[in-house]
Length: 158
Length: 211
Image: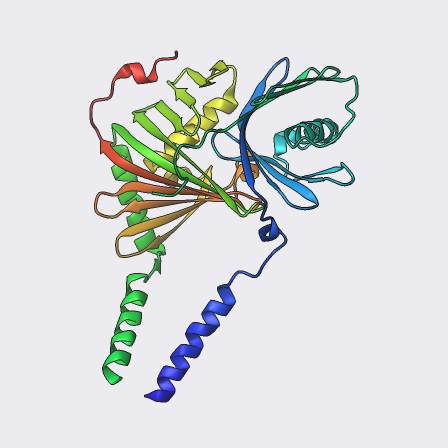
């Protein structure tokens, strides 16, 4: 009986060890989370959704998802170098010339949202009040609009 | 001591039995799919609320949104997010409407087949008709005590780029869908729980009118 129970305990322990989550680089992002409603408008179309960001000591990590909850793109912005890396870009955005523009534009937006020092080129028009941010890439005729998402009550699953 | 250990073993055994899952194959698989298809075919309308929880792997965080869904046979669908943002999607057979508080677009599905395809797949997913669309998905089914968990893996390239698989949970009691789980290629996944579901009730046609 004792041997059986010891065997059972070892089995349960092994299962927990196997499925236990090891800390990953992702789970080390413990900064405060921000959520914004965003809209990216071109002369012909618009994409809207939610931008979710987290800040750590060295970087700002973000995910842009569409209104249906599907991921459009993710990024990591290095606060020291000012460089941005795009990750997991949705197929319709995954063209080198689109990503080139998005990288520059999103970096401008993040610097503004997080009040980081920057010298923006004359290519951009920036409208920044206490709540909402609008960034316009004049050369490409792209407009980025962000407004803080009002979360009512505690976010939890039902 | 002996009693306590016996109770622990009984509880563990009960847990294992409750979670017992059977991967259906052959005639059992076909029987389950047929049952679900028959229920879907008999569904003239459906209304419900939903809670969508998106799990974002990169940020180890989640995003919760809520809304309502209305469906009417054969080609009317209204999917509306009400919290924490407003977003409305309407498909009424010939037109698709997408709109939020600042922007509205109406697309003619005759000239834009992408939207028509998206709407078709959404309707087939919530009604369960997707199980019989072999051109869209490969299908596998796991049976538990109370539900069928149907895994749909996209076959077409454009769908594969959107998500890696969808798992639909059908309540065995009424053969109707209760949950939708969408798994994306980047590791994100979304759980959509349907609540307050009513079937074959009267639905105001105005809900599907293009604003």
